[in-house]
Length: 310
Image (cartoon, rainbow, N blue to C red; front, side, top):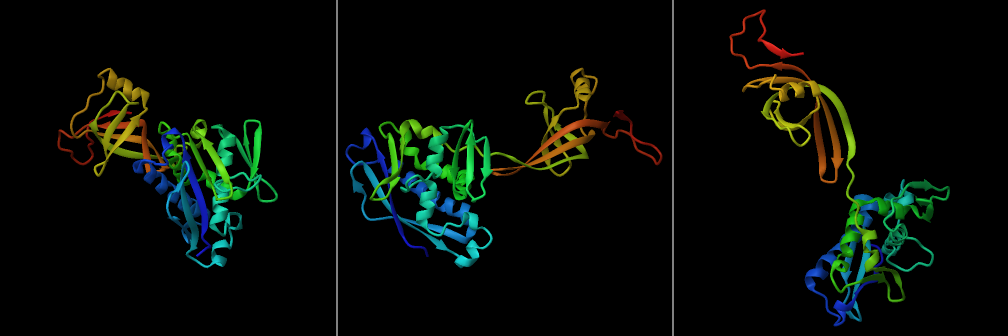
């Protein structure tokens, strides 16, 4: 186990003049702080280490302060943790809090300081420096940070937890969040800066893009929502966008009709994405190769059921 580190968070504003805070607002914020430390350690060390965080003693008076103690429990030997990924090696909880920007370190830019500097602007470029640090560029402005700070900035779980920690600022009468130790604040976030800390939406990442020939029966047709039809391959039902303009024109002009048991043989573009909630698959019928009508006659060898299409 790493050494225990003490730090303090503070919420302030007219609503807290009596040094009291609604437990229904405080509890989620405390859980979010635990999640922030835990997700930060996971971002830097994977499953090899875990953050431990405890509320220390009684709540302090003066605004509304909560004291914590925290440490990193290493689940593997330190030599295993730091071998091969020294760029993200942070050996104790104090260093994690510093990388987050929650403890005072003169001239240091942690996650909180970078987000305040960005003011909601998009990062347009990231440059790895020879000394292992990183230069972050936004518009014509730039700031140099340690590589660990970039790791935390990019981690969705870290950003979401930080967002929830600042949740009380969304309430009328709570206008300030601060964090630090007994000596000094590491960061003070005002109500007007709150939007800068909103967690970005998770981005979908393309995994597979493939074109294949597939046969479907029609479950239902739709002429809205980008012409997404419900189709069945015999085992499962999917929603597929129909982008074959000539085929759709025939359907719209009532030149093409369907009966139960008809089968469409299609050229299908299958795209699979990794999303924050898991895998997602999109189907697009690029071309209807053949419309095979349901058999109404007995088929003999050498004969095919009547077809319509190309």
